[in-house]
Image 1 (tube, rainbow, N blue to C red):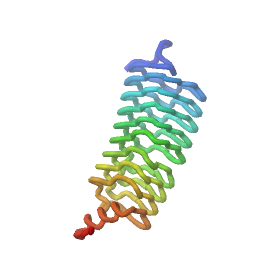
Image 2: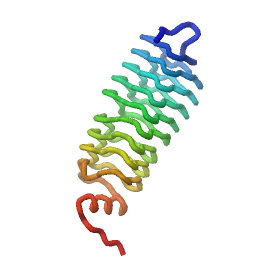
Image 3: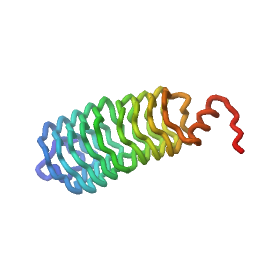
Image 4: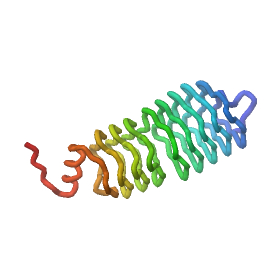
Length: 207
């Protein structure tokens, strides 16, 4: 993978490596980055709108207070990056993996996070309502007092996930093994309560 050239910068790249770049408050617009690596890059307070990052690696990147609207981070790897106070508005993060990242506080409005891996991440008290998290790996996550109301969680993994005080009302829970999660004061609607009862072996007779 080559180092970034003058033709490859904030507005686009393919197969480049950016190391220690200062892109503070940069307007990325609809930038397109494919298979590029970002190491210790400062993207604090940067903005993107309709940007595409595909199969990129973000290692030690600072996304602090950055705002991304209708942008896509598809099959990307985030390693030890700081997403403190980041905003994702209608963004697509399908298949991306987050490892040892700071992800709270964070503002998420809609979007598709299908198949995302957030294993072991602290997501407590976040508003993730109506988010598409189908087939996401949420195992070992701390979702204490988070809002997942209306979220699509079909097929998501919640093994040893802390769902204490989490609002799951209206969430789609098909294929979700709630019995494998830690539940305490978890808010469920009737459908969720029936699913949990059946997972514990109850035979539910609904008139």
